[in-house]
Image (tube, helix red, strand yellow):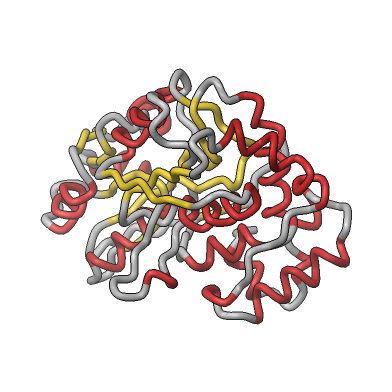
Length: 302
């Protein structure tokens, strides 16, 4: 079940939160019902559990060693920061929202550190210039950062261009076997080329430099589909219009977690308990709604 769909069900306990977090179901139901009843901007941040409040002084020296929690963000991503010009109270994004909460729990000021690209943010984190962010886990950056327990998983899917007759992921292979010449775009450096080539041996995998290039290629019908996280594909489909569609099905999952600089392992226990708390109390689900993050599904606890 998707995180966003929990608010549309008659009973929140039908969702997977009840399956993966069996303890405290009554308080969970109340938290979810409260989150679903209020506009996302009005959902209050949770108070820290007593155990985390007691652990805050020790955790503060590790997770915010300068006395300020420096939260790394890059604008335009629901995982990071979505800004509302003139109304910062309505800014959203998982890094923004969860950074504010944990800064409050640690009793330190919250500071946004902005970057143009995720790659630049992660380099700065590796150099100790950023304390906290939210992103998908990646081997590429594993030498620079440590990742928390999973916050959520994001479905990876396919976007077919305007006027498409495709409906499902399986239709891509059917089209390739019937007529050939099918082209599937992927973002260069995303690591998607190899798994997609194995899944679609009859399809040409085309490496693209940016999401803008992918949109332009789809609009010009130079590629049949584009593979990426559904959190990116749904907004792209809306901008393309004219029947562009995110296909049913997925080709993988990517795990989203909190990242902190290497060398701060002493703070990981506190961070893990923070993740479990915001998941259990429904605040993560509210942050997902605020950011309109689509394609999100519940992670397995691991």
